[in-house]
Image 1: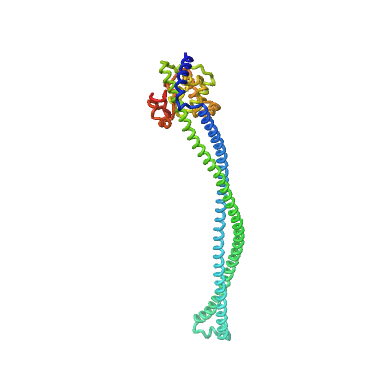
Image 2 (image 1 turned 120 degrees about the horizontal axis):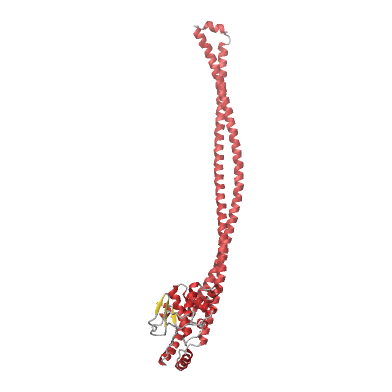
Length: 407
């Protein structure tokens, strides 16, 4: 019965479309789809090249980061060496000052020894000149008392002992100062050697820092060059996406025009009193079930069960309608009807296999389950361009309707 409806509808529609200036030519749809395919292929190709370029940028940036870490390490080591050099210089200055101070103390001790020695000689000379002619007996006899005698003897002995002890202390002080001076001079020498070693390390680290800095600059230059390649790809992609938007607008317009033509055919059917039942079951092959599921997933991946079943309903309503191809493949691949087919998304899901929910929804729709009798769906932004389309049903990110005009 459906075949009779198809022939009657076609005869009536041909009569009406013969006088319709807005008839969409197959060549126009083919041209738009061809341009979309070519543009999408370019987008895919450039996105692949951009991905490789981004990987190169990431790799170069990782190398640059590693070089930065090396530079930071060398810089820290150089700073540590510089700090040690300053510390060693200060230690040398302190040691030099202490040596100078000890040398001054040594000179003072020598001078004190000389002065004490001269004073001792003077006292000895005095005692010799005044008491050398006196014996111990005479000293005893001249003393007024025994106590005075003892005082004289003790005084002379004390003076001599004092002079000896003082001279000894001065000599010991000189020996101590000399020993300390030698130790400090040894420290000075060791510090000077250490400073020389640090200066050599400073030169080596400075060279390493300079080389690392040059390497970082060169690598950052490579990163910038690689990033400019990515930026160029972004520019190309932006232009291609703009072109795709333009082509999509043309495709939307072509789809709208086709929908308007089909509306004329629907009007012819209504005038002839023809009513189509598009909810019948369809004897689909396993491939057709998979194709339908892949198209549902490509068109309504994030729409959930309700949105996915609505898309599947439109496709199967078309298969069962005399106004569209009578196979799942014919409907899905019809020029400029499903953007997911033109963009290659359906093919990708076919290759990887559609998910289980989309397969389940596809099987339900093929078995005759429908959400509505819709033959079209568009995005809200696309249908908003055509105020004559009213009464549509909004599900998720799509609007669904049966005919162009009031529904």
